[in-house]
Image (cartoon, rainbow, N blue to C red; front, side, top):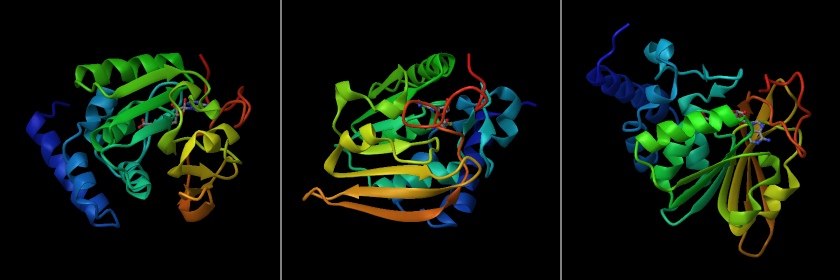
Length: 226
Ligand code: SAH
């Protein structure tokens, strides 16, 4: 199927209206960015016709690129400032890293599967992003070298919030993560106040792929390894 650049632009416009502003995404800058970032470039061409649809899409290694609405919701919940340094756990396709990089100063993103990191790196480089740093490793350990972070977003789920992530979050700072059993989770926002107090808010039910690592689920049958 041959889709032209114009058509992608139109698909993006419709996605923003139907899936984002038509729901509870009201941040003008976030809406503008979703209207601009070419999500299809982060997917396999065989999914181009669904690249702006209201659901997650498969990428390699049985992983997914999250539904656009969830990526927008997590960004809105983080209340991102242009000066923020953000840690993302679960680079996947790199799409969310691109969205975050448009909103923030620096994005540090960790992915457990090397081939996904390298694929995301190639796409993000081609698109000209200079403020994204990628690494392959266990993101449940955070990224000590660049800590602390103003905001942290985890795009895979675990039963508990990994300890190192809490330690690497600034105060004030915010972290968004799906927490709960393997099959369905709650999207949580954890806020560290300037006084160091920790507040937790439950946003909605959600389903994410498992976060696999020292402070997450065990490996093996949980998503294909390489
Ligand atoms: N944000 C991504 C969606 C990623 S899906 C996007 O926009 O495309 C979640 C990703 O988390 C998967 O690629 C999975 O391999 C990765 N993941 C799982 N456990 C991880 C861990 N401990 N550290 C880093 N990445 C992990």
